[in-house]
Length: 261
Image (cartoon, rainbow, N blue to C red; front, side):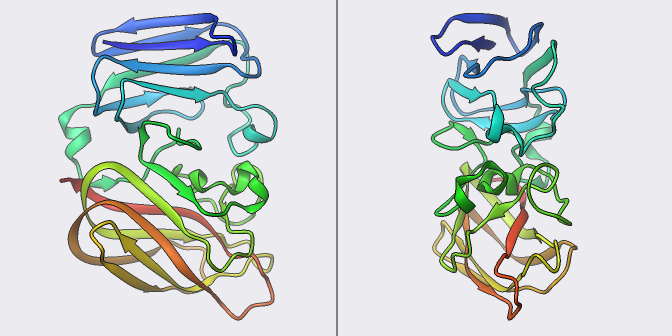
């Protein structure tokens, strides 16, 4: 059983729909601040094709618990999303069980358009020890949302993971289960000359291994391939800034390619 509900801050139910293998909810009113979307599944560890907003679209996610709660963004929390998202008087939300083909195919395993801060029960999930000024446009989750546009900085579509000039910054992506990966790609933010870049980064994996990655100044994807390894999470850290006047290196996107373990 799958359910989608829209709740007010006081838990008042506004909209609701339920289904067996898939569910569609048409929410025919504007969102209000402190509204939340609650997705419930009758089982744990379930892969879903999830759409919480029709302007953002579907994302393949893993729910590790029976319920996830998503805060509808407003104000400063919304500027990292398209202005078309969560706007207007009518919204189409949907969830369905992912197919074996969707789950098993070789793909970017970090992609989650609906990641958010905290213990979300929804994976993949990005977190970091620093995010510039705590602003949504510099949150770690921006680096796994599938948006690789990197020619400026700030509000959507130029959101990124910003490190607040901290040389000890580390970002972690958790998958919520074991996966097998053999390739990682990234896009550094390339708003030159405002931005700097990293000459080197270190990838640390949950199996205890590390890879040192030499990087260059570019707006294109950079890629590293390696012998396949089974992991549950990966961190990117030991970020060595290039000798450049700008103090602002940042990460636009991190992509981990592989398959289910």
